[in-house]
Length: 156
Image 1 (cartoon, rainbow, N blue to C red):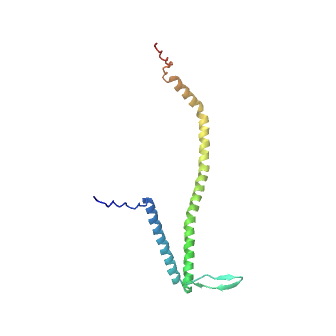
Image 2 (cartoon, rainbow, N blue to C red):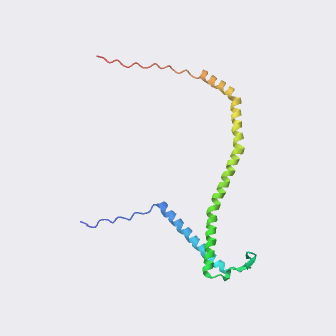
Image 3 (cartoon, rainbow, N blue to C red):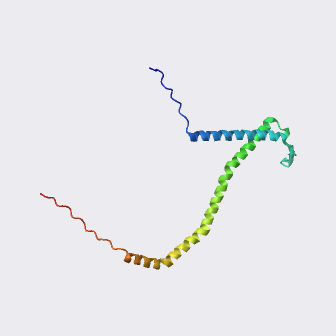
């Protein structure tokens, strides 16, 4: 006799969960690549025409981002990445809300007059509808009147 029992396979994650995990990993790789590209790109920028003025005193003129320390460039790249992520998450719902409001306004502008027109048409045509209903009621085939069946008598 074979004393070895067949090994049970470990349970696999559902297919949908695996797909979500793969998509999440791909998006994480995309974010990392964007952060690295922003970090490298900030090093190649020349003088940016930005001037910082505090209380009337000019602090910087023509900010040169290529002279930033690597940690400062990394922080700036991270801040840019977070700003882009916030925009990517905030803009589509805002656009959808705007489109929903536009559809509601169009429904109110076009739908309400059409509903009022349908109601007026129903009131105007209602005598014809009542006449047609009466004609149908008079011409329909008469149904056989049913008499309640008597219960069978029990024999002694």
